[in-house]
Image (cartoon, rainbow over all chains, first blue to last red; front, side, top):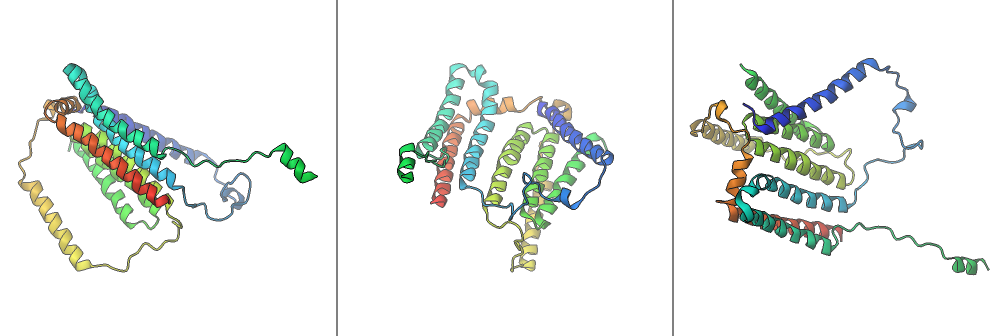
Length: 135
Length: 166
């Protein structure tokens, strides 16, 4: 009755239900004695300062966009990967051309520096300069 | 009612209720998270319809990709909290007419389309193999064009996002 993915989907649902039931039992059993100190936002022992909603770097968004494109690519490769052996070299080459076209995109991103992370460049202190300042 | 009907209504309720929350919740982050349940419910309905490839696409692309992108989009905006997201314009009458017409068109399409109905015992184990065979034979050109389309989308999206930075 069910397709093969239907069976996998049952496992996905079971995993979700398992987590929900575990957390619910946890909530039933555990003692609940909240205090003001406990309910504060935990920030490594410091008092939290300002809003936690900071503006994220645009880099994250670009990486997410690139991820989405390759996600779609992987989805399209699923059907090809299942049957390409039945078509011999022809089927293989068809998939490889598809992959090469997207590899071109990957190379473009790489060349344009979208995969680079803007790292801070630390300046290590130099001994002779420090000594010059001292004297 | 057999198990399939019960499961169908369960997924339908999950989809509709969470979609309602997506629209009515004030906090954008909560909306995005309720959207997760909506997508998941739709994936469940696809599974019940034995459309397994579509269900995989729904989970991988929508739950795994688009939702992440939405969340990043929300996180990229300054001052998410305490934003009044009500708009000043609310055209009740034109909106009702437009939605009514759209619903009428959808329902009539649902009723008058000659759906291909198959007994459940004839459903193949997986539809992905047939799809793959078609992609390599009949629709090979479309398969390769899809690659080029994705390439264009990749370059376009990255260059637009890069322009925002500078």
